[in-house]
Image (cartoon, rainbow over all chains, first blue to last red; front, side, top):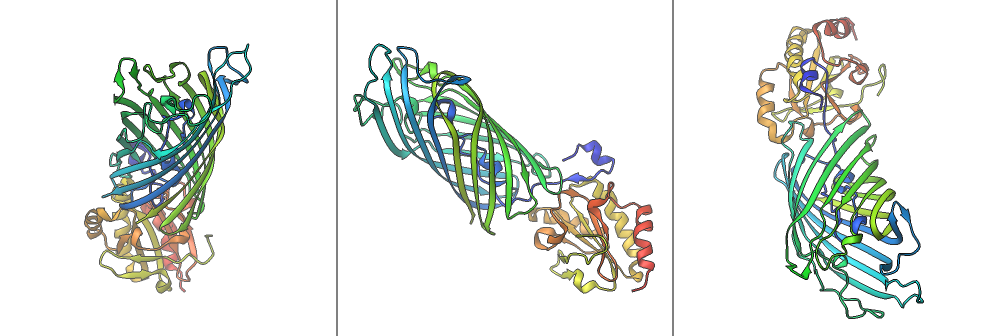
Length: 333
Length: 146
């Protein structure tokens, strides 16, 4: 809304995005180094001040098949580094949110992680490429619980978030390679369905109608592990902190179909510990994400987005997606 | 929605449950005013509009007040409504889809006795009513016969 000064002068006050419900973002960043899903589903579905229950389902498809280092793609790695081939991540996240009133919201997100991964192992340019080792896992991931308060302004369009990510997914050395020469040995800690850590999540968001047809929004979320199960010397792992910032524009000409464009920024710091790939888990990434939200029925909304990376600066050597796809449904109970 | 064309229909459900539709107000000049308890310019405009409505009621003026407050602010809306001499209700319970997304406040629309839109608040640079604007815009319409 306008400043109080402009309101005193009698200038009209912009109000809020009249979008009927909310969905809080999965924003995975733990399971695949710097490539995680950064789409803001909150903004995709529209922030809301409506009270009540919502049930959400989201599907994210992230196929990391491009090896990158720094700001460029590479075809190989220096001797002694792991040469990975690809990682395919599919997340199905079920969410349940409840808003007792226009100011408060509590949101539970339960992800199910389906992941395949293949790697050649340590690269040696003097030797032929070794046989691929592969893994496939599907199991519960790390559950997130996030509370939001958006009563700071009477228009309820500025919110703050406090949440926790729980170590409910398999972590550490729970999932093994199941094919190739590494079969039976544990998968990398960062590729396990969970991180084994309890993370605190801090966030904020703002949205605003700027004309009859357009809204803008911005949000940021910071996640940091405050406790980790694997904390013994030589057997420890702590995921790196991550910060996501998203902003964008929604075209609200028709409530039935709302196209929008997001920009998603992710900064991920290095994982730590003896089980971490310290060298190749940090980076800065920017995506441009066009998408659309549709009203299927008055109670059911759907959204679909494609994320296209437009910038990446990755530490070490990391598999990175050429694009990601996200889709979801939200039902107002 | 276009000035000079038939105004989109709107129905106000008042705080006491009465339904007032613009379709039933043919022969009257109707002002639709959109407001909220948190909207500072509205606090200046609403009493002005209320006084004007009282002074011109005999000439056939009807004012309908649509509040954008959420239902949980109903008591606040009721308190403001009690100070006004025209009916008010929550937009959430009412219907005015043809006027577009109410993205800023206040905004007003004026309908003449034949049901045509004569003033489109989205087109006004300073959309709040002032005594001068009411005299310039609404009083001549009230003076016109059906």
